[in-house]
Image (cartoon, rainbow, N blue to C red; front, side, top):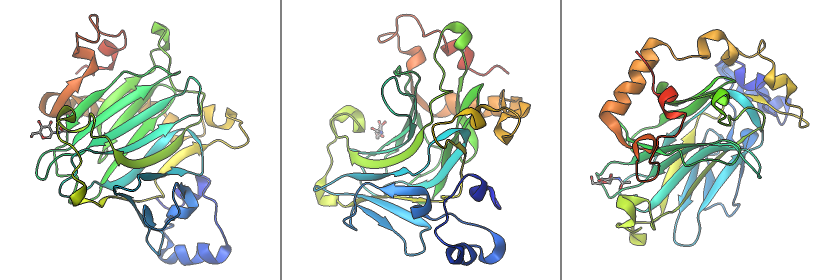
Length: 296
Ligand SMILES: *[C@@H]1O[C@H](CO)[C@@H](O)[C@H](O)[C@H]1NC(C)=O
């Protein structure tokens, strides 16, 4: 990681804070350098004293979340997340990049809670120029509530790869040649929230949030890995330059065979829903579907 966080435009409060954080020569961004909490009651967003971990707490009084101070256009943007342990039925942890409205772009991870011991579902979605309805759902191959795992996107001019522990789980390609909008000129912020979604989230809304099991807590760390191009003063041109950012290298413009195999492994073993095969919603598969299935 080294100084990547610094290049990513982390705003450092003071030189003293910098030298403290750099003990061991590995710089670790703090929550407050990267994010703004949406509540300040000390209850619903809790930040560790060293700034290296943050929790969002949902109870029957409030939901909450946080958003990045920076806006990004392209990059490899990830964080470590430990989902709500025990009974999380009815709760939804949303973790997403989103641009401003209208006609917004958005890249979503939504984690749908479940009763104790039952599997979480990870739903991903892509909005481009205001158009979404591209949900895919998978079970995870590990229990996401016992440890932190890495979740993120590698996003460049040609493709968006959703990753879990650096394994690709989904790819959304730039299919502008088919007339399909692609997120490429609207900077996006990174957001996380925990809220009550019991009208739909768990087993189709059948299982409601059990408030006697509150508070529900989701934890986040690794705030240095927001390795994206920061858009300053609304000028996107430094971010659309294709020569200065490692994620624009040719190796990242297509998926290789190993990545294709990983995506198909997830699809064949863990997929529970794919909008591309939902003929009730889409009598004809949306145009991009065929292109987004990796070929071996
Ligand atoms: C919850 O567990 C049930 C039973 O194992 C499963 O059918 C469902 O897909 C799981 N996830 C959600 C979000 O409902």
